Image (cartoon, rainbow, N blue to C red; front, side, top):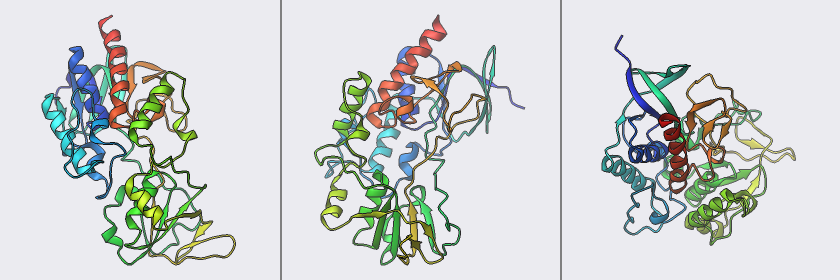
Length: 344
């Protein structure tokens, strides 16, 4: 067995959250390493569907220290542009990313933290979990789901509307992914978009810039929550599909062999169902207590273990922490706490 490697801080996850952590660790002068299970830079962005657009212009979608360049001909950059930006960011700051390395478990000891990986063990004094949600798609246990004979896939597996040209497709989910994928399919396929509650579009003038401002105000506790205003950012493709007649229908009660069915006897034959129903946190086993799949945190620090921080999983690890522009703030706070712990 190879000898375990050692570093002061180990970051698990090489997507946007891990890179933001690396930037601040470099500025703090700490020794660190970043482990990434992917074979290439770009985090989850390299797996998104072709037509995906950011909610914000490039200037409002940047990691700390390096603005995202404008994408020619696009006010809202696409996922491929983000992948290129993250790859360049990693190179620009010479971040020590090891890939592909899969973290398997973390053992806590009085002397430090021992992380088992697919490429041997690492010892560290502190740990940042930044593995995101992409690897754990969630599909609800809808009655009859296994009876449906058509195609079923999650947002995780969706790539292009062209794959469904001329088909009848059910899109399930009232969030941004459901709205964008339904809009992408509208006019290419016959779409029935279904949601558990009435759709709530944010005002058309609100995009990621305003959302970040709202998140900042929430940090100061002097502004409304984003969820109080709506669920869906009305990016241009969503607005266009809405103007062309795309509307949401109530959630069906069950799936049959041929498609969804409602309690009033309505049936809708379908070729495919796309579940835009979110993700669950992908957390490396640490032995820490979990509540509804989440490790309790104070800010980004695990309540049970001051040497472990969680970064980029959503509002439970910091307002807007799952966004490109928002993760920098929580990364700075996490690294500040770790620096204080290690140098005290």
